[in-house]
Length: 195
Image (cartoon, rainbow, N blue to C red; front, side, top):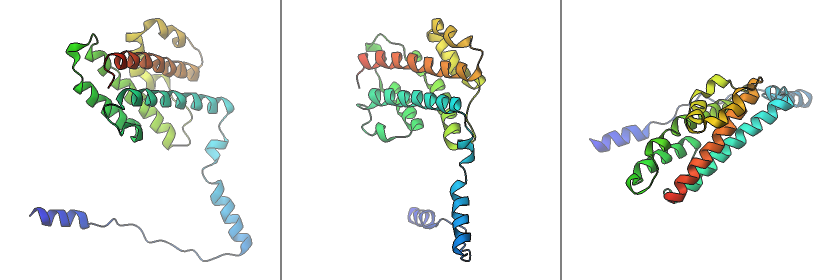
């Protein structure tokens, strides 16, 4: 029975639509078509302002910092963590938290589990920006978990961004502050566990 199921499940080939071969055009027509195909999808990128490009770059830099801090913490626990996607790194982090013997160190498991929701939140924002060229910003309301975490851990830092009139600056301030608080928490954990 298992052999039948394996064979049946594994033998299902992917089905695709047939490839269409358009008739060749003249060299001038082909050149025009190539230019049109080349220009596809560049409009949203070309239409971005310098401020939007800088904001996206800063946001992505914080995401890279978060991933790097996770890799530093988890590389002794999972030797392949560096090659994993951001969401998979978060999953390894959860497994790591479950594997730590919290009785022997002066840190609270709940403090480190609380990081998971804001990590997933900024990952979701990163995914929406990375997979849709028309998305150039996000709203402060999209950061409820992140801001709540920063407010709980470092209320003194919330004033640095919460009073900003510019929505994008406020968002970046919240994400950057989370990056700092996250780095601080990872350093404390790495000092005591050192996986």
